[in-house]
Image 1 (cartoon, helix red, strand yellow):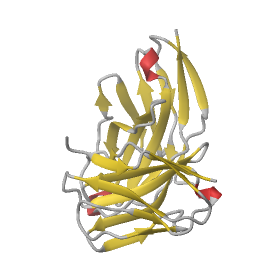
Image 2 (cartoon, rainbow over the protein chains, first blue to last red):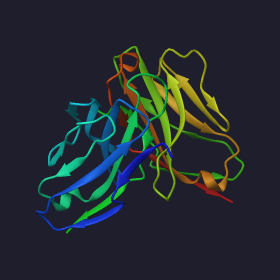
Image 3 (tube, each protein chain N blue to C red):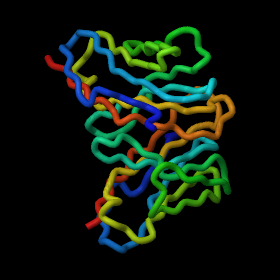
Image 4 (spheres, each protein chain N blue to C red):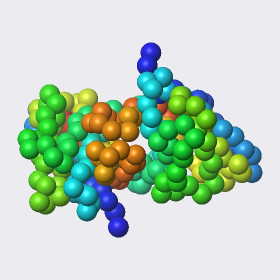
Length: 113
Length: 117
């Protein structure tokens, strides 16, 4: 099924551990992005990419790294997890132009203890 | 400054009644797109409706309509004939520089709608 696939769905990390949240889409979307959702804060943009090899920072990029080596994949890396990174993470993709709504993944619930 | 403001943290509506969820936005661009998303308790983000800044008519999608008032910079979502399944978080979002592409989607903080039987 076409869409955005996020893995894992749930993860518990210890402070200081590293991990990568995976995001893949099969719709040939140029644009991909990562958001975090915290209670009362809505969705805040972490990083985004407008195509392979191009990434940019969003509103809350600190503590996160991204890369975009292919059109399909946009992994989010936490190098040294902190309790403040406990959140629900969403990956979303769309075409760079046009009126189509973004397609969201199902989310990753991350807890850092 | 916030680009998207949703002033109603929570709202209640009686089943079968209509409800309006408020959204105001801030941009100096002439070209932008406005979106509404629904997030039920299961957590997925569901795209509901889109309005382009150059669209002359208000967008409609089934029971959803967007009351677009460009001069007031407001893009309120109207849900007609509310159903119990409409209980969810609703997010307003904007993408600036829309027709030139390459710009991120910015969200408001959301409104939690509860439909009462």
